Amino acid sequence: MKKDKVVIPQFVADWIEENKKDNLNLGDTLNTHYEDDREMHTWLYTDDSGNNDEKFARAWLDGYTVEKEKLYHVPLHDGTYLVSDDDKNLSKGTTYFMHQEDSGFLNRVHIFTEQEIKNIDERYWAFAEEVTE
Picture: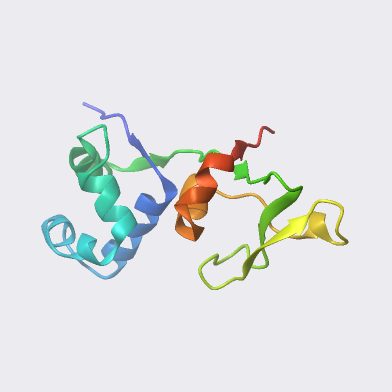
């Protein structure tokens, strides 16, 4: 019987692949290594759905599909936007504000996932607006 693949966020897929690459088994991964990653711990054990540990195990064992994350920009009341100069690693990039009309604004990264916004500062989430394609 073919099982449907579960749908998981990209960061969970990345975590599965990293742990498999390190030759860890499912039990070791669930029991010890999630503690090093706050985002994974939150998704596994404090998410409102209450069954992400089962979803993780199914993804590990049966494969998965990565969900398409919603994207947001963060306009603020004074005409500035939250932007970053590093789209590959926000934690190492500089996050700052820039007026929309500022030179080079469109060349800057100003689209974020929910988690990226919250990682910068949870208070910005209140201003986030979903970007539609």
